[in-house]
Amino acid sequence: MGDLVLITGGAGFIGSHLTDELLKRGYRVRIIDNLLPQVHGSVSVKPSYLNPEAEFIRADICDSEALRKALKGVKAVFHLPASVGVGQSMYQIKKYTQTNNIGTSVLLENLLHTSVEKLVVASSMSIYGEGLYKGSDGFIHNTTIRTVDQLRKAQWDLCCEDGTVMEPLPTPESKVPCLASIYALSKYDQERMCLLIGNAYNIPTVALRFFNVYGTRQALSNPYTGVLAIFASRYLNSRPPMIFEDGKQRRDFVHVYDVCTACCCALERCIANLSINIGSGIYYSISQVALELSKVLGKTDIEPLISGKFRIGDIRHCFADITLAKNVLGYKPKITLEKGLIELAAWLENQIAHDKLDIANSELVARGLTS
Image (cartoon, rainbow, N blue to C red; front, side, top):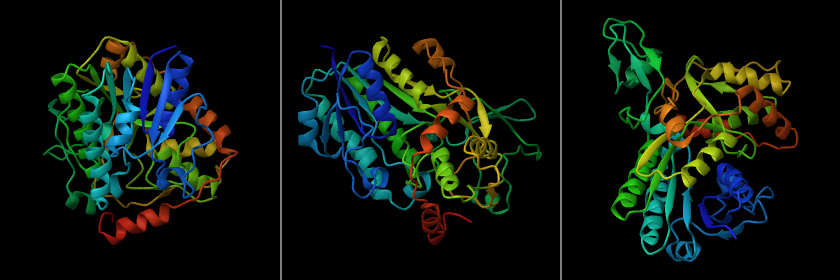
């Protein structure tokens, strides 16, 4: 019998794939998840894709008693649960803080009384805010931001004082965090709390900073999930994806298979007290990704809508420098975006998506968080 691993938030998109990979590697898996309606639908039943070999406990991450029971006999923990959504986090502040910050604190308090030998926490590229930039003078800009006034003037790019556009660079872990939303702040808190407690109590801890993860099992009816899932939901309902700004924002899309491989490497390697980027190391513009998805779905007659609008908390460019992941995890992404989208399209053929993007956007408009 292999070691028992606990995955908090394990019924979700990444957690369910990680469950499969761990079971394949001979581990036993226990999952704790509250089956949040925003992710799992109003019925909130255990998803059919969840591996039946995994033990499942339905409970909230803030339920200390349930966590205490879930941690019995566990050798390693993957901490994945989080309320997700930059825009929504700016008005559902209590919800995001309760799940992401308080939930993590409850886990850590209960972890102290166990024999857990490894903790891996899901962090996020959102903590960087804008990625790394280089100015026309060669100077590296570490903490650059766009002001609301710039966005209102549709000045999307970040510029030097002389007006020249800065060059975006791959973002390394050494880049100074720039927290542009409550979601980003909460993910940074999750990461720092886990690393701090892990170091203090000698629990080897690794924070994996996920970039834009995509793949099968994403919540298509959740308008606050990953951009590819949102675009897919629009296409499945014969509606154009709505793209903010001018669509030239650059992002790093990493397949869930590669993310799960990185998680297992973090578990099995003798590393601790590190934050590590997990991305593909390749960037694509948001418009480019929308067009590529339309091709594999046979929806090329539906052109994305470039809105020219912006959302408070959004960033211009951020893509991963994965040098550290390669060096310390032996991480090497294997799934290209082209291959990943083909797999995603095949899965989408049998899916029903309730497009709630208009509702989500109306919430932002009502609060002055988009224009």
